[in-house]
Image (cartoon, rainbow, N blue to C red; front, side):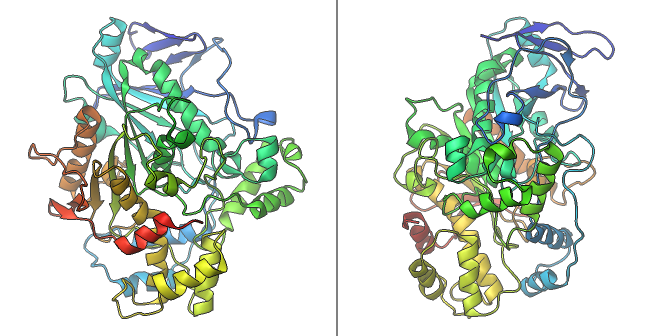
Length: 550
């Protein structure tokens, strides 16, 4: 089996090296703030190119011909839907905390905001199909301890980025933003320290293409299997950095959060087939589609845009063309629609995820700290929808696979057309927001607490306006962009670190988050304070989303 051997510290620019039977790695940089080295772009899988396109990842070949440093951080090919870019542009207008939130103004901004086309595959770092790499940030003292054979190992925090399964990277692209300075600084105040790992995984058509032909001549959920291989790599090698493979916490946001949950449900929760490669998860704004059906029309359109008729022919297309087609297909997705994502494959995901969660078919030994934002739904609506028939068409587009009867029930009973505020909305726009936000985010959050038999810890990011992804700036450090409420950031980062170290998130005064219990208890994080509260998500509608057979 491959292994690492620690080579002692070198002077000048020769950062510490780790030698593995398959590769040689030198730390790329040293951060004096966290006293940690970064080992960048460690390969965990073969390049998924040529005949390996659209297939499950494979462990890498031996390559000790040179020392790997990771000078140019790798990013997987990606794209962003135009409707999501519009939502991001509107959200940026509300980044100023002095601007008091007004729902009517928020909605109006979607009619007046202009966006320009952007190529998310250009910029520093380099986009390539050969992108299955991970980064490890490890404190200097831990590397020294590992080299001396010290047995006391540190907890490990792993990051799986979000982006609707279409966008993102381990360090954010094109400019680094997921910087764990605060997390590592807090983690290293303890006697053990803490190690941080972040991974890339395939996006869009490269990682999530589905359909019958993919089942026959490829692998469904290849991007999810990328993540799994990276997590297994951590289990195999993290001890050589001083990390404890039995104390791995996996944190993700949005699609990354949904992924953490899916890994707990692997093989229907049957850990005898393969042990869960972590002990805890922190799903922030967990995004799992209410349906997980393969969409044949997306595969057909993808092949048509490539001017080929089969998956095998698509494997012969040059990378530049494939990257461009993938980006264009994603960009032109219908409003509030992600064309790619996890599907039921009858293997790793044997059934609808929320059904498995409700039935307890997941690894219940995994400890959970989950959060959502107070306004997840904010930019998930189509401004052009005004009439009742348009609302039904919007449901059909955004949640493929629904029957006409189910769509009718949603439109007439669960989200009926009454706009006096008694149902949580006052317009077609806010009605769409309620449906989309609950179906894709909020009800997942509630179901996690309930499915854990009340044992999960939970939090709500309550800073105004609380739109989706707003909490990321309080989880990580974004260079040149300090947050307006530093105490909230300090609180949340301390909760993450204490949970990673002990399995119990601290509130800050030495006490702990309450468990979800039968009341749905959580900690609400606001501009001025953080306090224990009760979940406010509509329980009746969430019960329907969890039980409905889609």
